[in-house]
Length: 344
Image (tube, rainbow, N blue to C red):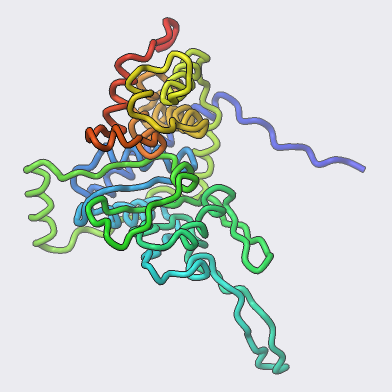
């Protein structure tokens, strides 16, 4: 009996060519997105980082900042199957995952249960206003986000890769909302804030949306490309000093960590989990490739820290009473954390 041989590992030359394709694809995707999205370049970059790293992304911003349009346009540019779920208080878990229904065979007249797939069976799933639905329905996303599969009536159904969840939240309307459990928040790789545009960009939006419809977005990257790029991200080397910096930064967010700054013990109830360190390193790899580099620097880690920590650092009552934010905590950590001498 002969055993099937495993596929040969990609050579450095192959990876170099793939990295060039990724950099070229980034430029084409940005050109397509700018047909409908004005500004928000930093937000687009972080969304692409999450996509290439295979992570989920939480988008937070007031209404009218093109959160839904951004995700929809990105899915079209990447030629990925898109699905939007509007989360409401009466949404049931089966409305997300799907359910078994009775179907009758027209030829035999016999009835049987068939699984009808829900909107979660897509490549890019937009969970719109995710905090407007009860925890039971929010939990329906947990297995899909972490395991890339859903279980219905005891049967498990795999989700086709690539699979991403983009969720949106409105930070100003709290009535009738359900805060996301910490376990679910931790499964989002990044929390990205969308803010108001500068005056010039806002004028450009008004001019564009009150004139002729914009040019349609064309798919410029294939599903196979995305999967290849994700594999390449995993193969990007990271210096031990950079990994150490990311892990140390995460550990300093924990009040019980020896050597944690006094302000962490004063304002933080719980620090970031090990998933935060994983997100920093993996996101750093994706960011490096997007910028045309084959190695991760300390600046990649520092640039991603706010989006990685924003939803993972839990503040105590003292912080809330003094209106201290997680971004302020992160800024102080980055200013005071020791930098490895051998890091880049």
